[in-house]
Amino acid sequence: VDGNDPVVDEDAEAERALADSRSSRRASTVSRNSDAKSELRLRTAARLRPETSVEQSRKMLEGEESSDSDDDEGGDDENESFVEEKTNPGLYYKLHTRNPADKYYKKVYTMLPKTPLLKKKKKKAASYLEELEQHGVAVKPPFSTKGRTERPATKKVQYIRRQLLSELGLSQWRSREFWGMMIMLLIVFWIRLYLHYIGQWLFLNAIRIPVNRFEILAYTVFLNYQNTLLFTREEFGVFVVGPMTNIVLFALFILASWASQKTFGSFPNLLSRFVIAYGIETALDPILILIVDSAMMRYENQSGTGAIADAAKLYWHFYRLDGNGLAGAFLTVFIYFFTVFVSLSLLYMYFLKLHNNGRMLDIYNRLHGAETDFFVPQDLEVSNEELNYIIRKAEQWRGQEGERRKTAVYDYVWEEEEAAARDASHTRREVTTHVSVYTVHLDGLRELYRHFLRLPDGTIIEVFGDISAAGKYALDDRTASRLQTAAPVAPAGEVRGFTPYMSRPVTTGRPQTGFLTVPGTAAAPKPI
Image (cartoon, rainbow, N blue to C red; front, top):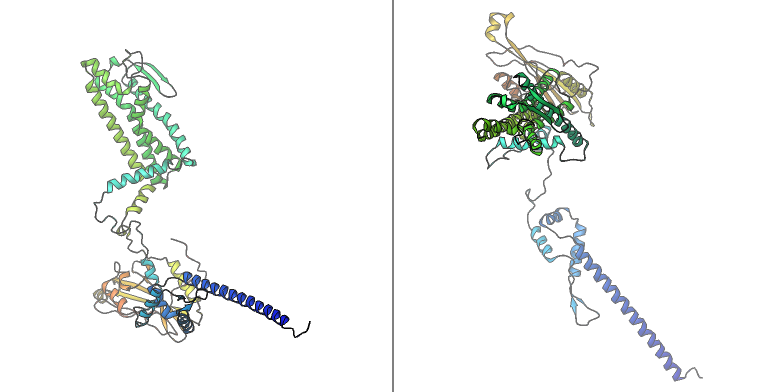
């Protein structure tokens, strides 16, 4: 076949055209995939871009760099132009990389002037006095009872109820305290039961009434006597003396707790739990006796052969005398209410003021007290050892730029002028010492670090703010005025102490040229 054969040339051209069409389709497919990926990337970036608020727009104005802003503007111009959809000829779209509303607000806030109100203010560090003012000693917030009537009695009862349940451990029945208290109540149950009937037995023997049977059982006591021999007052005494025996013994336990706290300063915790358990059983004594007697059907009159229930003694006595026991029933109910009221009153007073060495009342006052209830006149008082320690540490302190701390001592002497002229040996004088610690810089600048006052009565207090307010309860008015107006000033190189003369009519003074005596073995102060 000749090389110039036209048939071969046509076949070769057809193969080249087919290869070119395949490469163009492959290139268009790649371009469409790249366009789809870039569009997906832009949409994902726009979706993940955080929403811009008013505060963030101000932050953009102050914190964005110029290069970033230029890039963003250029990108916006490029992205916001219409782009033709290659797969669909004649279709155009526009891609927004930023929320149009955010972009509008950015332009609006760009035109606003940068005033101090729009700039973000830096929080100034609080001073030591401002930090102290942020704390209070009262737990109860101010104006917490505004708009409603104060009910201290109701709050006390609610507090006693919560503390009693907490003391008994009922809220945590799996705890060791709960089961220990249950065992204590079980032991006290028998003690209370036997003392109730022992008191009645002793009363019957005291009035010479024969007792036919006195038998102690596990759950009750069988007491049988000839009730027909008793007068009304004697039957009434037998009925009352049972619960009153436990009440009197409970009162003796309270007295022993009070005496122990007054003498030794505390009462054992185990005995405190025993007393509170006995008080609870004493308050429930008439009810527990009534439940046991009702279960044993002792309310029936057994013609002197069996024990009669305490609640039925007066009823059958009046029924035997007058044929109607209604008066005895009313009298029984009244005595029960009276004994329960006395028992609960003693229990309330003991639990609130003496139980666990008076902790309950202290917690109540702490929770419900106002800020004025905890006012301490010299709350910032320090000891002499602590002041010496502060001065010694100040003398040893060195700053990063060579600063040092120096202490200045000033005596303000008050004397009676007339007494000084009349008799110098009997002159009335008061000395107020002002101790100030300064931070001295290398350029001569002095900054007050801390300062203290030693009042005429020997009290040492730290002063914050107005110096006259610190000792207004112990200082003379003129001394306080002098302390406020004539603040200590001394050269930076040598901070010494001197005594300035105070204004007339009752002033005199003398210089002093020494620091406070600081022991060489000064140690950190112990907590007061």
